[in-house]
Length: 234
Image (cartoon, rainbow, N blue to C red):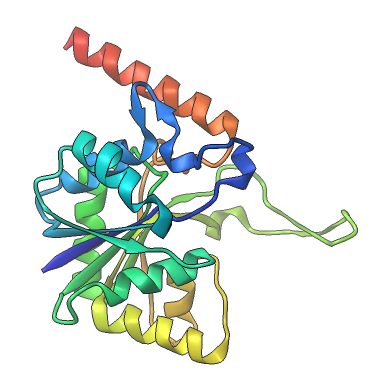
C-alpha cells in the first residue's frame, strides 16, 4: 500500500490574499485540484490523505474533491498549527502496515508522474527519497545584519522539492522523535536525517514549483497555458 499525503493546511500569508492560496484559481480551477489530479492520477498511489484546515472540510467536499475527479479513497484530515504538525496528522491517518508514504505540498500542481514513480522506487530501496534540483545560481551565506559571510559550493547544493517518499516506519519514527525533542524542521527529510538515516535525492524539474507568492501564480498560469497550446498542436 502506498499512501499520498497532500499537505494543504497553510494560511498562505505571503500570497496576501483573503482566500487561502491552495484554493486560488489557476486557469479555471483551484490550485489544489490540479495537485490532486496529478497525484491521484498516478497508478502507484493507492489512497490519498488530504490535510486541510478543519473548518474547510465542507468546502473541500463541495468544491475541491468533486472537481478533482478522484477515483481513489480520499480521507480529509485536520491540519495543525504548522506544516510539521499537519504532516504528523496525515501520518496518523495512514495504516501502519503501509509500505511507503508520499508527502507532497498541495500547492505544487505540476509534479510529473515519472518523477513521483522514481521517488517511490528509491524510497523502497533506500528507505527515504526526495525530489530536488541542482542549484543554478551562486549561493551566498548571509548574516543577520545583511552582509555576506561566505559563498557555498554550488556544485554540491540542491534545492529540495516534494514529493518526499519514505518507508512508513522511518518517517513515523522521525516525526515521533521530533515531537518528543521539540525539534522543528523545514521539511520531512531533515527529520529523517537527524536520526542518522541516509536520504536519497533524485532529480526533479524546475516546473515543479511551489506556488507561494503572487509572482508564482503568474508563472504557473503561463506553464498551463503553454501546455494547453502544445496539446492542441499535438
